[in-house]
Amino acid sequence: MGRKQTASLPPCAPAEVVIAPPSLYLQLAQSELTKAGVAVSAQNVYDKPNGAYTGEISVAQLKDSDIHWTILGHSERRTLLGETDAVVASKTKVAIDGGLSVVWCCGESLEEREGGNTIAVIERQLSALAAAVSGADWAKIVIAYEPIWAIGTGKVATVQQAQEVHAAIRKWLRANVSDAVADATRILYGGSVNGKNCKDLAKEEDIDGFLVGGASLKPECRPCPKPCLIDQTEKLTNNQSSRRHHQLQPVSVPAKEKGKFGVGSSRDFLGR
Image (cartoon, rainbow, N blue to C red; front, side, top):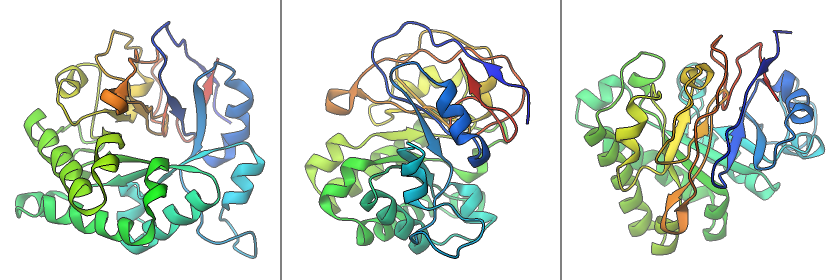
């Protein structure tokens, strides 16, 4: 087990914060996180009930552990583990039906962006999701746009590029789901987000927060115009109108290694 990290959540307006450590530390993180408004999330869940599925974690097991969130469709699972749009959509439906909320990730590769296919890729991923979930399910979904080429590379989409995709996602929801879902759904940006670039990104109309990776482990604690969601220690929130009414200041944490959904890494977890 890695050394426990400590984090100080500064006083701020109500905001939803979700920390996603590796599965080995879910219950440990749950026992350490006592601050109101901070939840723990899994990084993945299986789309089958309890049974002979060695190595997988079921929705029921997460619920038994009082875990109510999961990340699904992260680019690393799509690219490294071959999870298709259909598989991610199936997992999302099973998770929601079982009572979990989902941070559903989408994004394009560098080749797809350079080929001018970014929006087509995102719409394809959204179509697979919409085919699996019902209208009421959308209230349990937070969308995270993470351009694969900007994850952990130090590269970040320009403010204009990020806003363009977020606006396209909301436009697609409005045209293919409903106005209500388009207005209420929180759309986070995740792609080498840090304390510097988040300020400009946060000013955009359709960027409701952030899915933060390695930067969540750095001791940057400054007023932030929008709340965020933490990835691997990633952080979640909303802002503007019904989906944007909170404000969150980044968590202050000693720098160490990258974690997942909040503050922590494959060996570390968030302490209090």
